[in-house]
Amino acid sequence: MSFDEAQQRVYVALCHAEVNCGDMPDIATCMASLQVEPGYSMTIDADIASGKIVYDGAKASTCVARLESVYDGPCTRSARAAAGSTDAACAGVFAGTVDAGGACFFDEECRGGGRCQSTDASCSRSRQCCAGTCLAAPAPIPAGGDCTTQLPNQGCGTGSYCILDASGTSSTCMVPSAGEGAPCASALLCAQPFYCDFDPATNTGTCKRPAATGAPCNPNSSGCDSAGDYCDMTTSTCTPRVAAGGTCDPTQFNCVGYTECVGTTCVARARVGESCAASSGVGCLGSLACDATTSTCTLAPVGGACI
Image: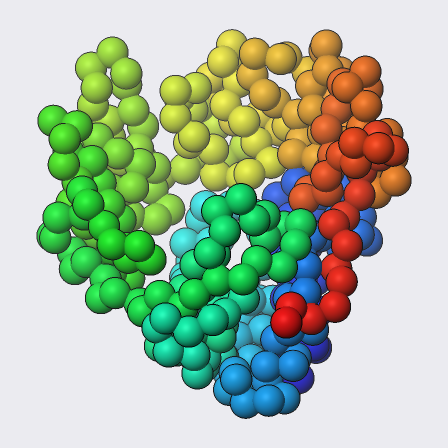
């Protein structure tokens, strides 16, 4: 599978997920609202052609198929937990050849999973090409290790998260392992698909199975299984989010993801070319930005390859 085909299919898969989760109204609108880093596609194509990046089309095909199978499924905690991680299927698609200290524009160019750190902190990758320097990938912190202070581009090992301890002064890499009924102090400690049903009054919680639509829930926790539900503060039940044009409660953030609660009405966010003036009361959809000159939602220009 060519890089261009793989990239396009990944974007479509991501849009399927956005629509399934209620964050976009439809696939076409989602695709029109995706902001690709300026120069990314043409630069990666040029790097593959020159050998700066070694691209594995077979691994890309496996990765894309895996992403499509996961992202086109139901947007629920249960379904995502059952699907598992996509990391293994997507490992090794790109192999950069630029050593640490070498010039780069994107992470894919750096050897051994290194990161391309911008040399200009004011450069915005969503609006322009940002020149950088490759940083070597440090070894991940193993489970049980101290992650209070981390090196740039460092994190916890696969499957673990950096959890702040009760004192609030230090953090440790921990693997979510608490099952249903186990005590928890952080949502990250409950194994998927369980969530931490937290009581702020006692500062304690219990790992619970996510609630189906119409089932009881705790408004203090994100305990609904479906991303299309919210926990109603009045009824304490998982309730479908309100569609565009419906009546909303501004204290509950209960509109579907591609809308905003303006007054007491869910109003669709502005699409490409639509007004985003402050008087409209709504922001732009997806990664669109409000152009200061035209007061309309636009994508940053893609431009040519970064050189």
